[in-house]
Length: 64
Image: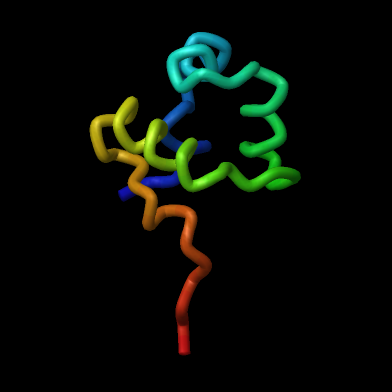
């Protein structure tokens, strides 16, 4: 499993944003940590990345 930022290295972020039905500016905010995607968007990202970036990638670390 990887995070979205790693997955998108070397890929066209504008094309990816459109493929998950968001504008590139919103994707940029997600990648910078300023915004958190909705659960619905997390599911679309997981589908578009064929599971490489799963919904669980957005869970906070649980190092207890």
